[in-house]
Length: 128
Image 1 (tube, rainbow, N blue to C red):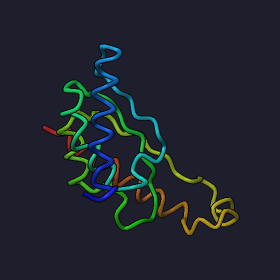
Image 2 (image 1 turned 135 degrees about the vertical axis):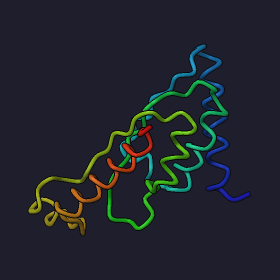
Image 3 (image 1 turned 30 degrees about the vertical axis):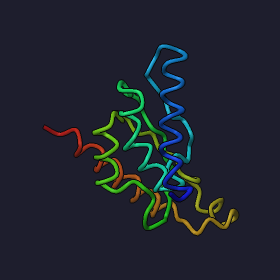
Image 4 (image 1 turned 90 degrees about the vertical axis):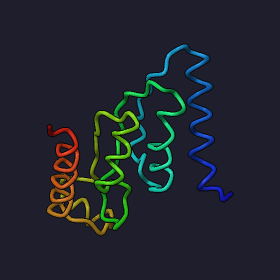
């Protein structure tokens, strides 16, 4: 088993251990780049519910220009099915000048479009 494949299982084991220790299975994921590794983010989304059985927390993710940033509709539906109820997200900057100074290869307009796309995906998951 590769390292990336093993990480979600180790993470799930850690969640189980924490849930038992503190007698509370509600988790809040605040890492601003939870989706930095899409395979790990997907694994967490897939295994969190099994690990703590009452995961009902939000996830904070990073919107960026990668083709696979772990935020596809499929990824988000899997996360929602496993207890993720809210998505918070961050962008590098709302200033094009600052993005250029930081050499991020991003644009304010592209960040806006990605953010709107993400919000639509998340909203569609909750429509009846």
